Image (cartoon, rainbow, N blue to C red; front, side):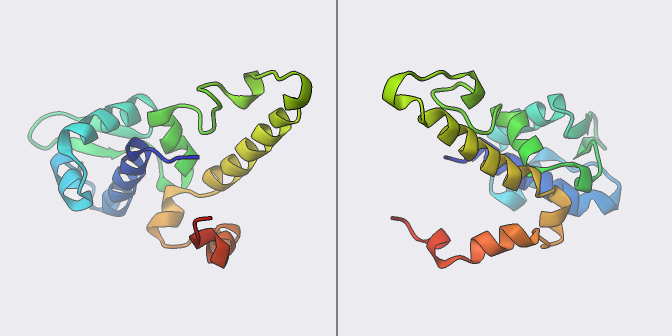
Length: 153
C-alpha cells in the first residue's frame, strides 16, 4: 500500500489547522504551505477536495482562509485520505469487495479484504486530535514499536 503525496499533504494540512484552531481566525493556505513545506498550488487543490469532503470550511477575503469544519476528535485520518484520494485500499482501482476471482486465485479475495479491514482499523482509529496531542492509540504505538515495522525486507 502506498500513501500518496496528496494524502500525506492533506493529513499534514488538516493537522496544521487543528493545532491552530484555538486562535479562532481562519488560516491562509500560504501559511500552511510554508510551515508544512507543501507546494502552494498543490495545497490549494487539496484544500478544495477537503472542503468538498466536509473536512474544512473556507472563507474568502482579507480575513479569509481555512478552518476545520468539525472538531479534530471527529475527523479520522481515514476521513482525510478518502476526501482527497477516494477509497483507502483498492486493487487495480477497484474496491476489493467489488472483485471476483476464479480458480486458484479465489483465495486472493479474502486476503485483499483482510488487508483493507486492517488498514481501515488503523486509519479509522486515529483522529486528528490524537495526532495533534501526540497521543496515538496504544495499538498503533505497539505496531510502530515493533522493530520489524521499521525494516524494509
